[in-house]
Length: 392
Image 1 (cartoon, rainbow, N blue to C red):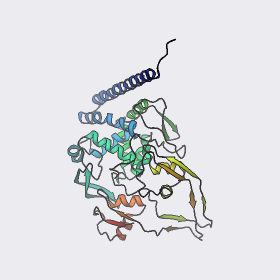
Image 2 (tube, rainbow, N blue to C red):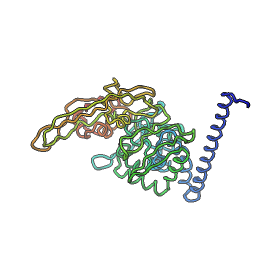
Image 3 (cartoon, rainbow, N blue to C red):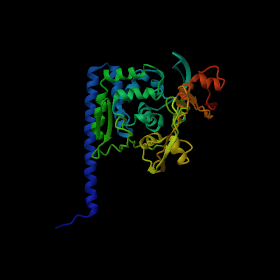
Image 4 (cartoon, rainbow, N blue to C red):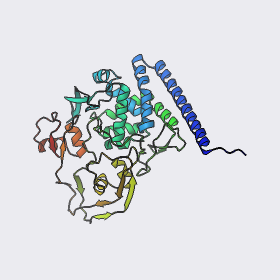
């Protein structure tokens, strides 16, 4: 019997894989084309044109970064007014992302909601060469910034809409409701279903929570693999195909090191002693991991991992790095006759970056705007300057 060389087998397998990938991509493009035709038939020219322009990039966001397409689309619509805002039409910034991109930035007026009312301020926003470049940067921002780690792999549109607001992306108290209305009115969950189907994602519903995992037989276009979750009720935190290290790590409202925990802890009336348990493990960082997601998976804290591995900036870890994990938790309560709260007196400082607001910094460190203003003698909470070092 004739024998087949290993090189020939490898060549055949490569051809089969390429053929399968090409076929899957063609099928996805055909499915996207069908939705685009429905958009054109059902909606106005302004609406259908915008939807059809962003659908491919939004679906690719799930394949590459595990960011839900319906969330991407709804935020782009809401933040840009269907691409008609000055920031979107002139600078291709559909999501109101603050800061600079490749050194490009523009000073624009914007509204922030705080102290029970809207206030107009000036701030710096990123400038892009195209809408698709902006969408990719948005998806990378969410996947690489520890503040938004709960969105990675989240398969339920309503949950994602709630989490993006709670994570501090926007200050508008109606933000979640507005996103959900857009998702429902324009059937954007159909985009999610398409992304799940062609990336080999299996969505499991537990109660009102949807979690996702990537099938081992998924197409070659999806390189994301599921990471472990802390409980069945938490959203799946899948690693993305992008590097966890980014030079553009500032968030839409700036990332003032969300790994910093709140300084306020509550004490109870009953007395108990503090206890600590620990067991040492090691973990190799995969693409898309964050210290937040790793800490959550191992039942420990970001600060514990950072301390154990001499990590000065918890937002920067690299693929292949081997971390020592001590899944230790310590709890302590103080004896008191009445329930009260105690505030840590440990002093911190933060240097304001371009795009920061006092609201975003206060949220990141778990303190109030008024507390920050008082500590730093700030008379106008709308005005802070890049490079200023704030006491926290």
